[in-house]
Amino acid sequence: MLAQLAVLGAALSYGFATIFGRRFRALPPMVTATGQVSATSLMMLPLVCLVDQPWSLPVPGWATLLSLVGLALLSTALAYVLYFKLLARVGATSTALVTLLIPPSAMLLGHLVLAEALSLRAWLGMALIALGLIALDGRLVAMVRRIFDRSFGQATSS
Image (cartoon, rainbow, N blue to C red; front, side, top):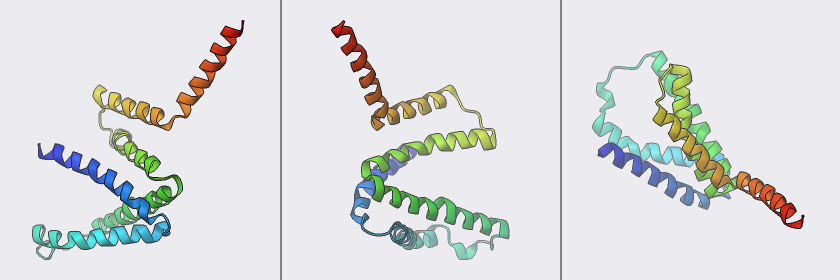
């Protein structure tokens, strides 16, 4: 039950973040991303100290530190810069649609890189996400409508 609530909380946070993020359109994406990551780090610091007590843990090795730097630069900093750049360019609604690509990307990477097995349920879920994105995008629907209008228009004029 707790895991399902966490998923719902994450989805709700994505929705609020995208709508709230529109306020920062005028700022450069680098400034917005730096502000968000810095503020979040400061907010999490007391919780980290309380729960993990990092001073009591062994010093991590170089591989761990390099992995941490890679995650910080690529998965966090670059991702947020791209997110805020996208938010400024295409708006909140289109930016929110990008978050729908996260689960299929993770599943496909797990399948391709780690040789994880994907169930029929996972493939069907990815197909539903793809159909949802196609429907929300509207271009395919508009193209089908144009083809239908042309075909239907020609049939009535004959």
